[in-house]
Image (tube, rainbow, N blue to C red; front, top):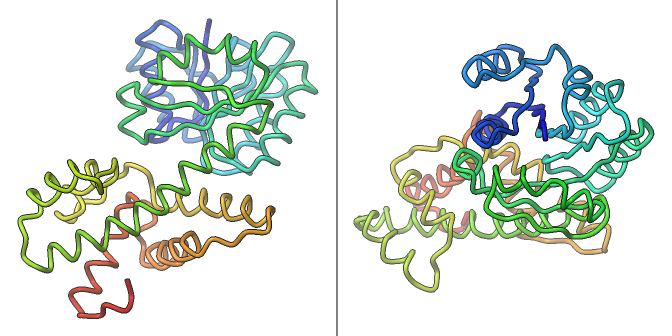
Length: 294
């Protein structure tokens, strides 16, 4: 199996490196060309001149880009290189409608498509600990097993194309709960003058413990907000989740609140920081003594 990777952002680079370690990486391409050239030079992989050329030379084409429109642009660009037997695997978080549209374009070129959004953040991508939530044909899911094992710790099949996206939505809804829960709690502890390393250690071991507290707590209380998972991308993902819920006639106040906090931080220039940057707003409230804004 030769896997080509399109999209070498925070996630794609780690995914490509782990594919390379297992002898599966065929070629890379990125819209910002020097990223692909640098990684290809580091790994001894092919730097494809364009997405169609990458598709021609690889059995599996893995795409990992930011937004719905980016996915459709990439699919259109690689389509001339597709034919029967090629398998396009999109790891982006997008709407179900976009996943279905991408599948139609790929299938029109004679190839197959699965949506496989991931969870685990940059750390998971770097360490080969991603979780894949996959929608597509069962035999396509089975065919991708070596690639999923190279890049992650788990992969699960959820049904036809598009089924991976609602599953990823559950993850994003939970993150929308953890982030506005953990950040004011730690801001409260810091304002009270507590030893925050000790607080995080104690609380992480109890009923209120969670991944976000354990992994991001130590950095956020020290004012470090390195991605991670970019705040602007979580805003994008939550907007998709909001639309999914609205299609079922449901409004989610917690999601609405988190989106508003994110929008303010994005306006202040913090969109490229980790989602733990929400701590900035919560810390500021305690510094001002404004408890009503939590």
